[in-house]
Image (cartoon, rainbow, N blue to C red; front, side, top):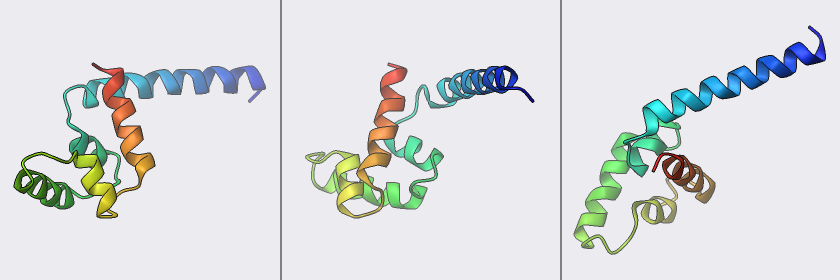
Length: 87
């Protein structure tokens, strides 16, 4: 496969991934997006949400998950970037 064909194929793949990401991530919250990215389990998100509720929402979910070492800051930043794209 020549360079031009590979470049076109990568471009198509990126466009398809962008469309799929938009469709599936459009209405999701940060915890759902992190689960979809495979960075945290739904159970850990639920635990963090319960903790957040106990603290009257004084801490953001991403901060709680990073503080508990469930995810790294990069994962939260990626999930936030996905959310911003669709707002």
